[in-house]
Image 1 (cartoon, rainbow, N blue to C red):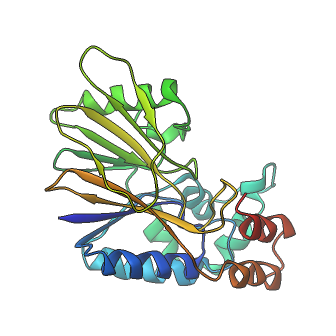
Image 2: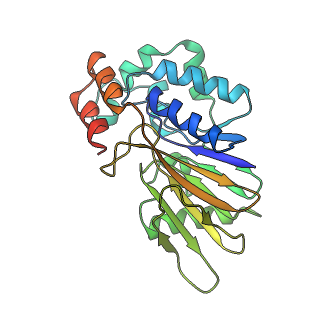
Length: 250
């Protein structure tokens, strides 16, 4: 099976649609959305409508920190992510809020563990951003019988780490569109990037496609109307910083 791995959509419908279309063209047979469906962007209700349809068709959907924040927003904004939480909360239907609240933090699919942040206490939303943090997440995951792969998001970058017998964790920077063999005699952990808010200086959307049969992981970058998404943020009256971030990919 080819499983499309999408994370950090951040209320960006155009980016989500572009990645879904590309994944289907690549033969994706299943979809997993790894959290942060909302937050920052101008289309939270539209994104959740699409995601809820995918869930009804069998997609795996996880909760991210921005999803939890939108469901239960703080009274005062103390960080950038909190600035849109109250606004996002007001855009959502009661059904959509209940959907966010009910999402799990992790999911298991055969020898895959899916998580938004780190498998090491996933409710603490730790970033998997280097070999140390990737190792902590991987250790927590492989303590579960049969787990060989951990896929997550949260850091808005695409990175692959692996561990083989007798060696420490190794980081590997993937090339978009090039399949990476991920043999099951090793343990693997990947961050699949952000669909709706890349932060590596490239505004193109990110997602990954895992071929469970061939044990190959392919990272993709997808062009979409990021200028239009930025314009929607401005039209909604959300902070200019969020629009500029989409335009710059930072």
